[in-house]
Length: 221
Image 1 (tube, helix red, strand yellow):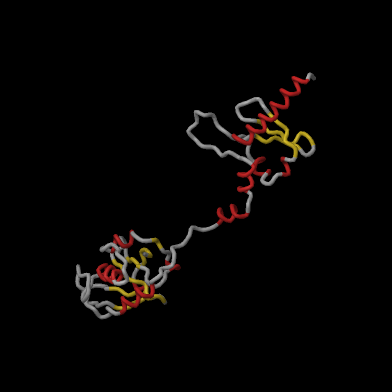
Image 2: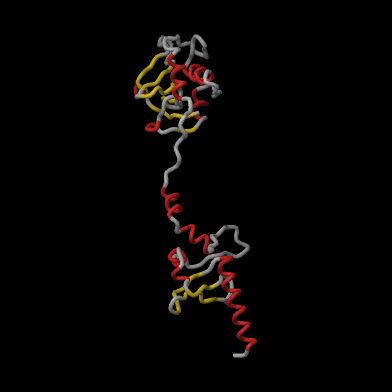
């Protein structure tokens, strides 16, 4: 082989290796000890990469038959560089895939909300009233929140749709709990399975069991 031909061969190998890292490549079975062959998509080029089969994440590359798409494609396909393979195989990546969605952050003044609500126990229920001496259900919750510097929507449905959703088992004092279909009633969770609410005409503001009404949802502001 002439010197010129050897140089062309080395150039082609370097180009193939660089292209494989840039656009992704097909991995075929190792053809020699401590080496694996990369085929560059959309070209006839291939290159033997010594030690590739020992690289972290090599098993991920083996599970794919091809990478890369034509420039006319509207879909995005993954580009596997050594750094990307390392990231895929890291313990942190596995932990992220298996972790649950984050829960709502704890309220910084949940107990203060409950303390304010308790000062109005015994106040009469009046439809459309929002304090300070009489309340309907959402008027009560919105007034209590205003006393700790938090502005929330006025109606029960709007309150249930705002804030950060909270699961039943994750309720904390100060959360707003909605009841019945359509979130037609709201109260303030007081802890220990109790709420404080303005229930209806003839029932003053009181502390009642959480489970006395059908649970709809809960939110945290």
